[in-house]
Image (cartoon, rainbow, N blue to C red; front, side):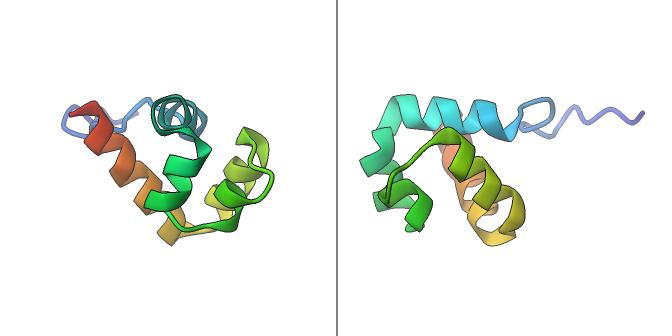
Length: 71
């Protein structure tokens, strides 16, 4: 198992990122920052996780938003 000491996302699950972002920005705030339907129409953690796991460009945006939040 390789260590990733310089990777700030190491050990942080996508669900943990999404929960933190939703708590900070709310669903409307997330929808403004990342324009995806699962944040706009009947948003939930489960539906968002399903979409983000299958869509690399959206996941990258969410990860970037999380990194900005943690700074």
